[in-house]
Length: 507
Image (cartoon, rainbow, N blue to C red; front, side, top):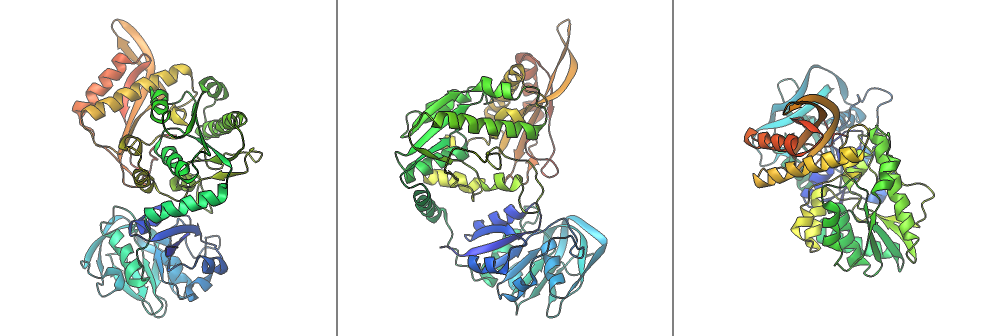
């Protein structure tokens, strides 16, 4: 087993990003609720603990806290933002509101004699986001970084191996943040760097075989990265026992259903295509709320799975390509629900399967892609554009109709075609059909058609993103093609909002 770093969640939005950064440093990480017991921590036996940020103030009674016994376990601890304040407060320090709050990229000076900043420049940039700060250090602690307004921007007690940073080292806006995390892992925790996807694959295969045995497994294969990698891993672990059902819910991108069938029909899988577009459209009639759409689509998926599985012998397990961001964005512990995912929390209690197999549940998107390459999947599948499980159902604002689906499929296809032709680099790009209509003129006639919104973002983690500044020489022709070629589309706008504050998807 690889060494493990435990990340305790206190409601911050970047907890999974912290876990991803740790894994980038070749150290395995797990995220658990902040209120985890000391006994559970001992079972995990981590080489280090990281306390995440959060939106609360540690001195308020209803704020999330951890057992103070954690700080007596002789396990290295790194606090981040709220986690640093919690660390200091728990061992005798004082935390109070800031006289001047800090937000955004902030200049700071660090003590390079500290193991946390070893071999780094004395001047650094850190992303700050706090209204409280440590005003009195606990006994045995000293400041190892400061900003203009925050004298204790980083603290340490090297004898007890307790460290804290008021800024966020996990985000890209802290240029040397990953190095700071790496210094904690290797200089303080004594990490060996023994986590890699080769071992993950071996362990996952053993776990799949132990869970499934000789039983047969049903997988909903969408052709997206997650389900494709899941299929490849399962087929390797349990050859001859995997049945892949491709549910075409009628909410796919243009021609995507046929492409998926062509890509998988000749593989060593039992591939079944179900054309269920009319069922989904009927179930979604008059539904406007995106959360309702997700739940309905998820429930319909399960219904179709059960119908098809009843036609197959000995199907006992349902497999899903759930990955870590799906889990975190659907909420957990005291985290806010950003949006639920059809494969997280949408399964009914009376589901007619013995269990759910989710071998990718602990992986981030980049790890899933790398695992896919490791399993021999072609680049066109591994590098495929991210696509939500509910498909265009959550890219259509308001009610869903066959007309709206057709409009969005055509507009989205034009957008993707033009970006590819003009070699525009983006990590994710798509069209959204808004529920807004506007007046236009075609020839001598007045029109009243839908507004199409275009979205293209760059991101390394899909937890944060920036919009791609597509040249107007590209956006212009895209808009012209959409309004001229797509009946029902009368206006085109471009989304220039980052994440946060927006999510990548509109719904």
